[in-house]
Amino acid sequence: MGEEVKLLDFWPSMFGMRVKIALAEKGVAYEYVEQDLRNKSPLLLQMNPIHKQIPVLIHNGKPICKSSIIVEYIDEFWKDKASLLPSDPYERAQARFWVDFIDKKIYPIGSKLWNRHKTEEEKEAAAKELLECFKQLQEELGDKDLFWWQNIWVYRYCSHSILQHVSCIQIAWKIGLRS
Ligand SMILES: N[C@@H](CCC(=O)N[C@@H](CS)C(=O)NCC(=O)O)C(=O)O
Image: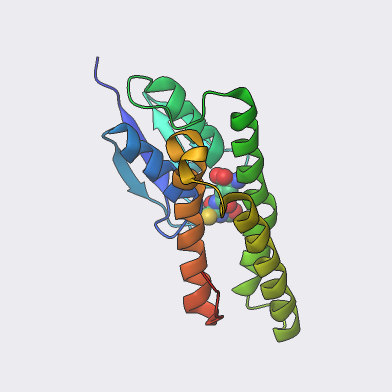
């Protein structure tokens, strides 16, 4: 039976980007449904009534919400392609830890940079904090062969999203981030 897959997304979202990467890695065909977050569609409100956020994956009519949960769902459902997560439980835990770090630390700090209600001083402090987080991430990932993370899961799953995020920050705020 063919799978009916729809993705509710907003193109610049790093969370949506994760899901798009996972679907591409698994070769899953899907219908992309762009959302206007200022005027949320009845479909988005129906499919994600708790958070009312994108991304939402709708698989055979059933919604799956929150990007990291969606990525793991994709990995578990489309098992025939190479796994996105490491098979070793410890490495899986590490991968999840760093995803959580990005979601709970990097993203909220990064968001302050383009928040027009923040003062220049607050933005300056946020930029410093963000660079500190990138340093921590770099220390964790930097010296290691990317294949240390089996199937370069964290790299595929997070770094592309981070790079997208960083580019937005650079463009929006013109801060000079070192590679
Ligand atoms: N933790 C969620 C975050 C999703 C998220 O923040 N989505 C934003 C766009 S990037 C959104 O839908 N914002 C609209 C809103 O919160 O009203 C995930 O990983 O999916």
